[in-house]
Image 1 (cartoon, rainbow, N blue to C red):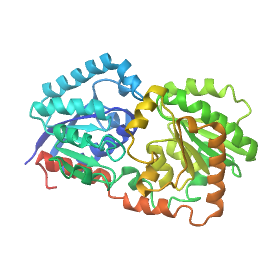
Image 2 (image 1 turned 180 degrees about the vertical axis):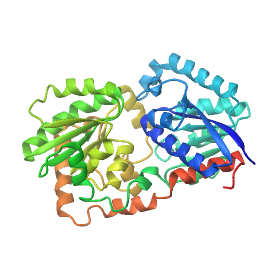
Image 3 (image 1 turned 60 degrees about the vertical axis):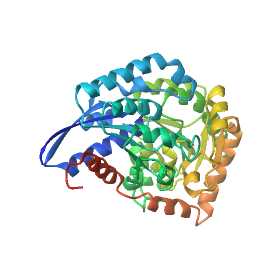
Length: 390
């Protein structure tokens, strides 16, 4: 069997853009030379580089917390209808929603009602809150691709096929990337002098997150600089539009040695000795690179009150969830004061320097998540399509 396939795919944020691009590459590799694939939908730079016909900029979908989606609801509904209409008009063979759960669930549900096969890539955090969402997933998706091994059992009582694929970051970062491996090269690339203590500050990739996370992180950086001699701070930003916001915030801290670096989150972590990290995918990247970290997250008061009532997991940071223990300090919402953040970061930095087994648990989880995720996910999608040899 040979021919051409049209696959719809939508990612609503930068982490989804990375997942989507890897899946696109793997699907093309698995089906070549028998099938050519056209991808249409919404994605960021990486997916567009892989040939995605993006219907509108990914930034149009940018929302944060619970309140923001409500404020942007009219425009999001218009975009939802527009994407759905385009998927149907182009008669896509299959649709893949990459994370971005609420929007993609609605879109998948509509398309499934029209007889399209649907895949959802990245399980919602059913282990943490609202476990009843497994039933909703089963209504809108034929297959759900899970990044973590503890997720498929949550779907055992539903008709959806839940496939553990592993995490692409675990594949991309080698198991021997810990400690000083890659640090000197990363510092040379970023123009960081040797001999400095380097702290990565990762406050998030959305403007709403920056507004909430930057003030406590920068004030914590000031306190760290008072106690740790010869320290430099590195802040990556994924989009040029975020740079002015960072520059305005840094104007209040002229005494700090800070480098703003475009799109270099992994290189920044490789160059660092420790990191202040907003809860999310970057915590996994720091774990795989064996960097001590302190994890924090802030929401608007309204969003936080809702989230606190819905939480079922005792942990928020992915390393802690995976290990089922408080391995990484979590300072959330009002607990994430500059004083507490600075103290926790300096404590973890000292422990990493002094304790030989500090990263042992990180190494174990890294190995468990190395499953050739892009290829495993692509093969699950191809099985659903019923084409190729997978």
